[in-house]
Image (cartoon, rainbow, N blue to C red; front, side, top):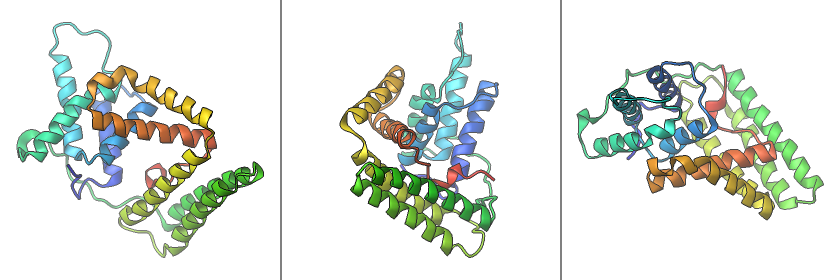
Length: 243
């Protein structure tokens, strides 16, 4: 399964968020688990139309239940339906998922906003590198410095506001993976075990609603978030760039 070209990075997250809120009927804020789950769908190549269809079908099925208690209070409850819709699309059943209206892939950011975001993240990573150096963790400090320098190079290479942020997103995504690997190596064994246990507790209620690949991806995303919070590292993805 792979996301279609029109499923640009911003549309993928924002349309899923809007669809979930619309179906739920309340202005609910997505949780850390919800955001990590969306990232795992994106990482796993679940097409945007399949994600939207799965969410809608979950709520449609819930609405038909004779007795309803509470609400669908997490995207995790939609995971099985999303996977089914993605598999149906992969099998070539074109009508298996509803396609959203196409949206222009242009991101509403100026050159200065993008550069400011990248440089702000570079400084945050450099600040953490200084802490690692002060703690005599030379390897981690050097690896964090490399990421910070790369972010500054990307910022300096932007000559005008891009119509499509995908090339920049690809670069910073690769840097984020490098930063994650460095954070795992820099994390003390006991602390890393504690973070992994925290992740396991967080996803435990939803294990029966997801496939093994989905759970693996979700665990990686949740652990990444926990690591970044532990080290005060910024998320590098341009999705977190606010206009």
